[in-house]
Length: 269
Image (cartoon, helix red, strand yellow):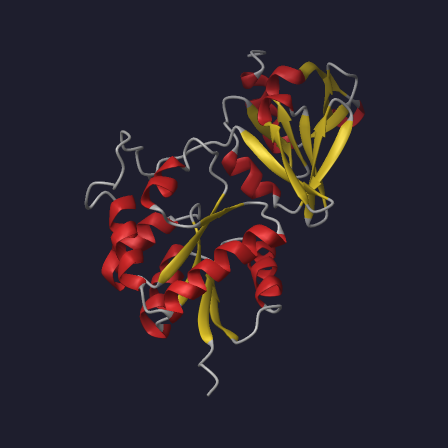
């Protein structure tokens, strides 16, 4: 007798991120994607109405975060959950201590398979109560089972990444954000420019802007985010257009609506 398909709900505010998970799940046998959601509020409605077996849940979303979704549903009513996150390794200690699985963007195929197969085994063996206990630990509703001091659970307060993962030839390496000169949009992708080298990632500019420390980075144009200490000069061209010149000589356009803020950030007024 063929077991019933494992029913999966995918929650992420990034369309490309949702599609990535869908594509990987398409390789797995006996899986049914019963829905997707792009906000915390939509996720709550979908979890309650669809009752999935397994949930892929983005931690950082506008409005309600993934952890706020879990709190509102309640640990005992949450399905088996794999968190998807851009948090750095230090912040991920809370997930480690709670023994909950997570995927760090961008994740490779092997890491996805490992997390999915682990969750699938727990679902098929009907051991979700163990997952509920771990989720309660993560949300601070009981002490974490560890002799080490408990790491604080991630909260809804803004946390800015200190490195960004780049996938190349099946491997993911991490670029410290302090090394990034600027980020340029390239269709559905973004290019991290580090000392003249370009590293392509599948991420939206808005998402990157939200995840970078605004004290260090500024979006000067819809297609460019710059690290402010790389700016050498502000150039005024014909017709009132502005550019910035970086210390390496690179010139980037500045949107009219961002000129005054940029001037202030650079200490020019």
